Length: 447
Image (cartoon, rainbow, N blue to C red):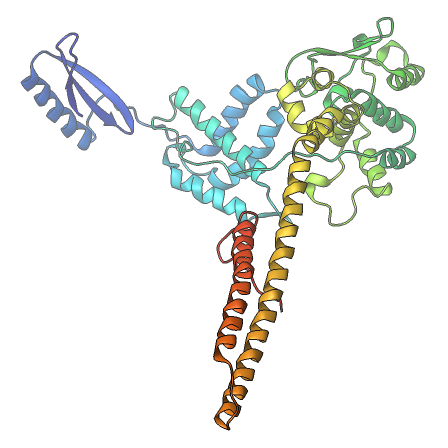
C-alpha cells in the first residue's frame, strides 16, 4: 500500500519504489496531506524529476572489473588470482557494456551460453565452473551498490545456480601408490611421499617453511603464510604430527638444503613433473572423467581414505586435514569399518523375517500350482463323464436301461469333491497378494 498510518504515533507515511528501491516518507497526522504528497511524488518519479534519485555512472563493466580486482579481491581474498582468471570470460561478454545497462536477462543469456560452450573439443564447462563465475558477477554488483556506482537491485539475485557434483572420491590403492612412486625421482619423490604421509594440500606443502618444522616435538605446523595462496584453506593454523615417512622425507630435505638461504622446505617447480609421473604410471587412461582423474589433490584423499579404512576416528582425521567434521564424515564415513559393521547389524534384525516371508511365498505358489493342476484334472474328468453320459443316453434310446439315481449321486459327489480345490485356489490367491501386489499383477495358470 502507498499510504499507511502508524498506530503508535498516528502519523501517515508514503511508501513507494524508486528505480527498484523502496523509499518511505513521513508526512504527519493529516491523511489528505499524505495523499497530496503521494500524488506529487508519483508525478516526479514518472517524469524522472525526483531529486533524490541517484544517477548511475557511465563506467563500463571492464573498468569496474579492474577496480574490483584491485580494491576488493587482492585485499579480501587470498585466492584473488582465481577471480582474475574468471574475470577474463566476464570481460569478454560484458566488457564494453555500461555497468548500469546490465540486466537480469543479460546474465541469464550468459549462463545459457556457458552451458553450450566447450572448454575443449568434446568437453563442456562444468556446472561448478559456471556457478563460480556467477558468484563473482554477483559479488561485483554487490560492491558496485555498496560503493554507489550501481543504484538498482542486484541483477544476479533472481538467477539460480546450477546443480553441481564436484566432489572427487578418487583415491589411490596400494598398487597404484607403488606405480606412482616408481615414476617419481629425487625431489618429486620427496614431495609425493610427504603428501601421502601428511595429507597436506599442495599450497600448504609449497608454503611450508623450515621454521614450521619442529623435530623435537615431531610436529609440522601449518599456518598462515606470507604468500596468500599458500595459507590454509580454512584460514586456521593446525599441527600435523610426524610419522616415520614424513620424518625421513624431511631429513632427506635437510641434506639438500642450501644453507640458511633456503626458507622453504620444498620448491614449487615439481608440478609438471608430477603430471608426467601420473601419465607414465597410467593412472588416467583415455576416457577418464574429470572427477575420476588423478591430480595432486588425490594424494590428500588417499591419505584420509586409508586412515578411514584402518578405522581411525573420523574426528581425528578431520583435525589432521584441517576440515570440519561434517565434511569428513560425509566424504569418508562409508569407508570406515564401524560404518560397515553398523550396516551389517541390520542382517541380525531383518534377514530372518525376510527369509521367512520368502519361504512362505514359495509355499503358497507351490500350493496354487498344485490346486490349478488338480482343477485341470477335474475339468478333464468332468468332460469325460459328460461324454460317457451322452453315449449312455444314446444307447438308452436304443433300448438299454440306465439307473438315473445312481448318475445323480455320482455327479453330486464329484461336485462336492471340487469345492475344497476351489477354496484352496481362492485362499492361495489371497495369500499370494500379501507378497505380490501391484497394478496389473495377476495369477496365471501354469501352461
